[in-house]
Image (cartoon, rainbow, N blue to C red; front, side):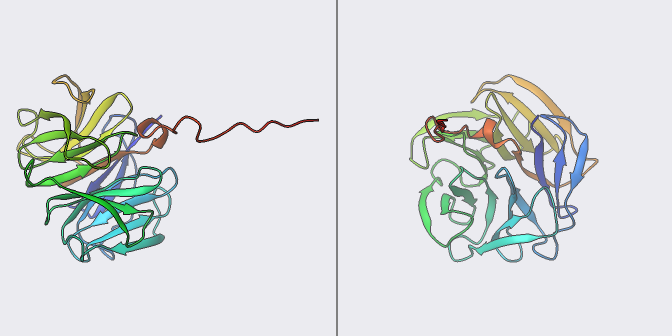
Length: 244
């Protein structure tokens, strides 16, 4: 069963909440202040935890497992964007958002300095925050207009769908996909909450839970079930036939 990883910058920690979705806290990382005092984005690659620190060093980090104090690698992205907000994983590359240039970026691997693609979304929303990947398209959050967006591929300027969520939470930040529904975080006047919205997208809110007792500065979210979020492409693994 999938769980949800959430970044919170009140305590400078990453949290693992049981299931999709409950307020049950399964575990949390050590305080990350030694690396960056505002962990903003996080994801899961099936083994390790990529996360973003934007306040002190503007880096993408890869933390061993869920969670340890071992930092496997990091990449300084300050020359690309000085306010990285969130990151994800598409099985090959690292999508992330930059709030200074208002862009979606695709960084090669985990991590190299090669930027494979980028898309200026300032005309759509001047405050891109959360980002994920659904195997085909890119779900992301625009905190400026309080919307969830679905951008075609990685990346085009084509917006396939959007959903105004300002009536639910007026500061949406994190955004991911569980194969059926859209999971997202909001930290606006309605409180620090985790939501599950039907499909990509409908106005049907299936579930929400208050996380304010854990951290009062909830940021992004991601599922720890990579297979549900980004299914393995057909033919990616071929059967091996043994002859006796």
